[in-house]
Length: 189
Ligand SMILES: Cc1cc2nc3c(=O)[nH]c(=O)nc-3n(C[C@H](O)[C@H](O)[C@H](O)COP(=O)(O)OP(=O)(O)OC[C@H]3O[C@@H](n4cnc5c(N)ncnc54)[C@H](O)[C@@H]3O)c2cc1C
Image (cartoon, rainbow, N blue to C red):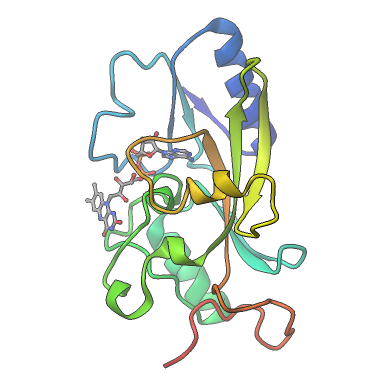
């Protein structure tokens, strides 16, 4: 098992697994309901749980959450720093890495929808047809060439398309241009 602390660490770990031809799995919060992580066929495990940074990314005009943050840690950081919320799941120990890619529903979903509705962008380490591992940032902008990779992280579940290192969240209707409300993920009711 490799514990990683940065996107560059993840790229290195994935490259090594490709070179060695080992089956790779990734874990964030260890709340898997299937055997995807604990499958005996898995020979290399990338653990992103040390990556827990939650911060406002001015360039992206969205709040960035690293994949190793738990649901509880994310709720707390959003509330204490900006007094906002994303409608995440009900169990504080769930890892954001596996949670958001599956859509993520919780107590607030009837009022606010899914966490995936607020997903503005995702950073994913993927392996291309030639076996090269690289990090990509995919956004919900229709003009983004990686837009389909973003879409693949809005509720598909049942597996993964790469190693998620970071998510960015912003309300679908917000531009983030207004400096007075850059953190308003969920409008007050
Ligand atoms: C007690 C419990 C309560 C739950 N409550 C809710 C709920 O209220 N709402 C809800 O929507 N879901 C809920 N879930 C389901 C949970 O969201 C999923 O099981 C989720 O995949 C767990 O993510 P994890 O990172 O904690 O788990 P892990 O065991 O680490 O991983 C689960 C899956 O996600 C993949 N994965 C993990 N991290 C990454 C990453 N960084 N990049 C790519 N793939 C990754 C793994 O490879 C594996 O396939 C609950 C699960 C449990 C066990």
